Length: 127
Image (cartoon, rainbow, N blue to C red):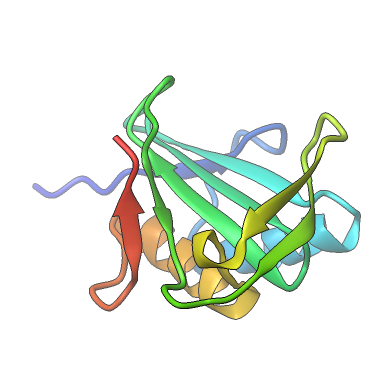
């Protein structure tokens, strides 16, 4: 029997979010000024989504302390700021290390649905 991991949004309800509702939850959090969201899986992995509402950093970590892997936009020029963390820190990232928010939503939805990056996603391993 295949068991797919479930995901919950840290700090929100302990009820798992499905791939069908995770984007609505992210949009609601962004609209309320919560630009950093961490999801925890039933297998101990973490999925981070940090946005400035135009681009997003999407990271997938195997466990606490894992440098993980993150989505990239090869060839993107410049840097973007406004990635405000829950502790108030305002980060700036090279655009190559973030993706447009629409792509970030697609990646998160796929990871929550299947546990893996989409086959056509661009990402790098930071381990």
